[in-house]
Image (cartoon, rainbow, N blue to C red; front, side, top):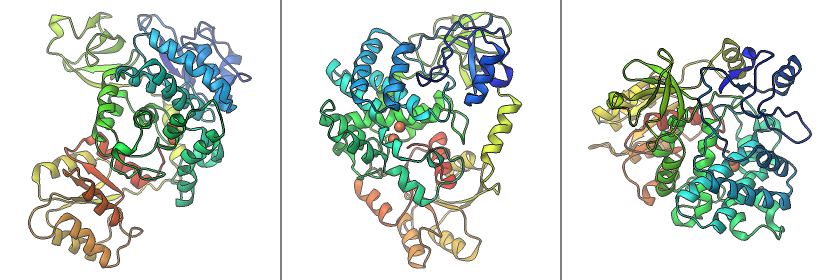
Length: 486
Ligand SMILES: [Fe+2]
Ligand SMILES: [Fe+2]
């Protein structure tokens, strides 16, 4: 099977993966043959495309984690906020996941933007249970975790669709509306006797960060319940690998990379370790490029998640990166989604209008040469990047030159003025958080450092070593103000 964007779908093609939506709405089951009417339905529904069967990709083995029926029941139960039904779906789902070995994310979302939250909730529940299982949770706990996954974004019902699906920058007010959803979900579940307190707790805490910078309560470390920590991690994985109004999907490798980058600041590292074990880096159907110049499509898994079985384009051969001797020294250098058509690019550009096209400017303050170079490599393609190597130079720069859109300060800067003192001086000078957006980078993990950063109204604290995917994503979130992880 392979994914084809809408523009490339033709009558007569065979559907390889069911398109599931609300019960009353249109559904296209696996095995159906596309007709002009079906294609029109997909277009009107806002789907980005469909999985079809073709000869080259017929070897791709990707059983969905749960049956189509359970998936659809889940979507319906969540859309209707039918708690009794959600409880039923949760236990069916856990049974199905526990009886299957591997769980694969869909390469492309077969979701309309309107149904995004329902699909997302079912996916998050599937991933959460998968990760929980890898962490050795009991069946009883997995049931509760699955339930919490399904319910985690129920509070979004209260958020207007225009805000939830807004392609451009969000205003502070809109941010606050979105940030209210964990508490709204908690309240909605409060008087439901079928929902145990641990599930409600997981729902209200699913956007709390390890270092206390999350919402709604700014809890940190041990104060955050385990179920919430698990949902937090897989929630972000699903958001990154999904196609949204304002972005194309990130590859699973990039998403896992991001999770690693956020260890100890955003995410619990034991949960991330389990996620790395069970969420695939190269799911079947994804395209890969190898270090020997060959390319192909992933067919199935081996015991090593980084070395799958691949069907090569040129030779039509299937190779097992983990076991074929001649491929022992060959690595995957890049992976990506099949088929980027002109139409899609155009559509995304349209979605982006309303965003400013001016390149944003970033000033980085650090006296560490190697890290500065890494930072420059990470950011200069997308942003104008300036570097100064001392606190006094940074202060001078801000006072005398056009202000950068973002100031990133290395907390480990040696001699002269400390990283924190740089920002303290600037804030005292009158550069408030509205005038000067600041992020810190550093190697200190202690709570006190985080509190000091927060007191100075820094928007983020990034832990070293510098992880390019993580840094790029954090900077984008801050500068574009898209709320990717709600
Ligand atoms: Fe979510
Ligand atoms: Fe959420």
